[in-house]
Length: 264
Figure 1 (cartoon, rainbow, N blue to C red):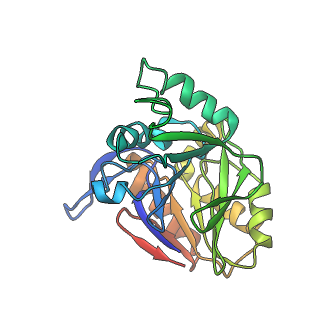
Figure 2: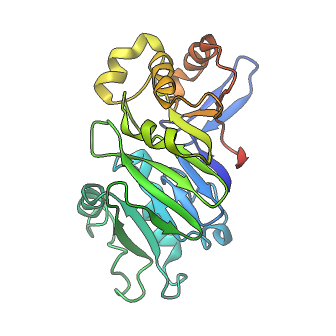
Figure 3: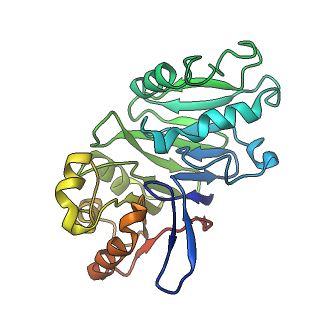
């Protein structure tokens, strides 16, 4: 599997490091094998039109804006271009309800699951069943509930050769690590970490992790052989989170950056 990191932060901001170099932080969106988006924070601002044409599936971990915001603009761009094969937008039933009620409601944005006609609409909404695999262009996806402030899942994504975990937004949780620990093909785990250690109270109330909380989740996973890729850093705390992560001294831990490509 080839995973392109279009966006990997918990918000969007242009930051500047101590050396004066600029970095554009984008909301979370991972493109797998050119056709499947894992979350939709960054799509249209990161991909050419020809690349957007190839997307056939969008997996939504939950309904928070930074994870869904690319779907409306993708749909707008794809009107008249899907040729009767609409893009499948996957989510928990509760998530799809929120997205349809509050975004695709013909007030905030047109309902692109029925416009310009139901036959020619660029989107179709597909509900996940908890932990039941779905097939997405040669990869299998299992949605596993995690502990966030709204209904949310992480994903086990696998093909015949490799698999990876994607935590979605989560505080301390359990089931997804049990699923990952049992997966013999597991080659990577992408785990969120949103706030520095001294903001642990904010992390807990908002359903997120700090580096110290992340350390405990990695222990639950129990797979020291698996590389850990940290994402969803809040840009305003980016440098402080990195310092706290470095203090963990975990040799298999890496902070994701926009523009990376990871091959499993």
